[in-house]
Structure formats: structure tokens, C-alpha cells
Length: 274
Image (tube, rainbow, N blue to C red; front, side, top):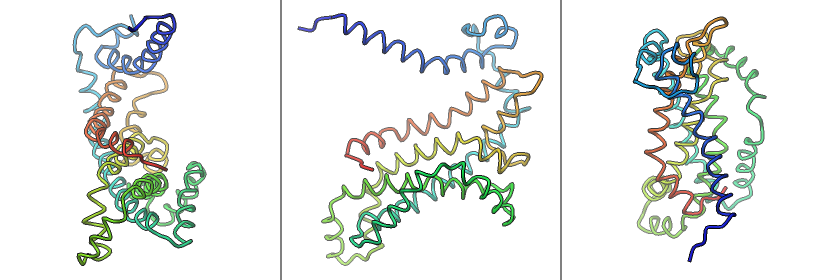
């Protein structure tokens, strides 16, 4: 028979506090985003009494969030596609290689996670400027692909090592070549880890602020976080517009997470190893 003890009470109290800490930022987004400035000034933490939508209209029309959303979609989608294609292909070699060069190259790629990306931001900016890519979304795409590739390779390689080699041997007995084996046997089995890669890399790239600000600031190609940052002025700021913009910026990420979360659970449940 279950007994409610003082330990259970403490655990419940701790969980309530932890939940409140995580929910508070979301509450502030909703509370301020759906209220006018006068109501927010009177009670910053109050609940909205009606759905005040002018903040969303201002953020979308006057704030220029429409083009920024397109730029963020473009940069995120192309970067993730590059990471999935290159990461899966390279990881297949690393996972199945039996020679010493395979493990050495894997170690070099994995070591990229140990290097802070801030170290390479300015030298790469200079290189992109010399190459004529300054202010071009392609520069951010190349940067994102390079920065996120080590984690992507680690995830794919760890997952592929769990796939029995007998599947590929059976395909080769049936006459499949190397590419056919990879495309028709391995790729369909990668759906869980691919969902994990899309969520982890997609969220990180979508929310990235510093690199798009440095590479694309002052151009029509700025992303959503950079465009929302421009809402904040030195002497006056419409916080309702800012929070409404943040709410809209969160929706694509939430939708993507709910679509791919089952693949993440299957991926980690199948024993994904780094």
C-alpha cells in the first residue's frame, strides 16, 4: 500500500518549484504579448483579460517579420539538409570502416565539438568577405553546416553501429552495390536518428543570434532573432510587440518538435550512443 510520507511531500514541492521556473518565461510571453502597453505598465505579471492582437499585427507588418521568417526558414532548411546528407554519408564510412584511418578521421571530426565556435567567427567572416559572400545567407549556411557537423556525425555514427551488418551482407548477396546498400537498406533505418538530428540542429540554427547578426546585420537577409532584436530601442521599446514577435518565432520550433519528438524517443530508446 502506498504511503504518503514527508519525502514525497518534499519531492512534490521541489517539482512544483522546478515547473514554475520553466513555465514562468512562457507565461511572460503570453501575458505581455496579448496585452496593450498600458495594461503591462500597470501590472507586468498580470493575466490578459482579452486577446489583444495589435502587437502581432505591428510585429508582422511594421516590424518586418515576414521577410525575416522566410530568411530563417531558408537558412535553417538548407543547413539541416546539408547536415543530414553529409552527416549520414560520412557516418556510414566511419561506422563500417575497419582501418585505422576511419577511426582517425572520426576522431578529428568529433574533436570539432571541443572547439568553441566563437574562435572561428571573425576569421571566417574575413574569409567570407574576401570570397564575396559577406551579407549573403550562404555564408551563414556554410558556417552552420561546419559548426553542427561534429555532433551530427557522432549521433549518426553511434546509431549506425547498432545496425546489424547482416542486413548489408544480405543486400550484397542479392547484387546490391555500395551506394544501393546505403540508400535502400541503411537510409530507411536512419529515420529515428534523422528526426533527432533535425530537431537538435534545427532548433539551434533557428534560434542562433550572434552569427546572423554579424554576417547578415544591416542587409535584407536578417533572420527572425536579429529582426526582433531591432525592436528594442535605446529610449523606448514596445515590449508587447517584442513578446508577440517572440511568440510567433517560437511556433515553428514547437511544431517541428511535436512532429519529430516520437523519432527522438525511438532514437534514444534504441540505445543511441555517442
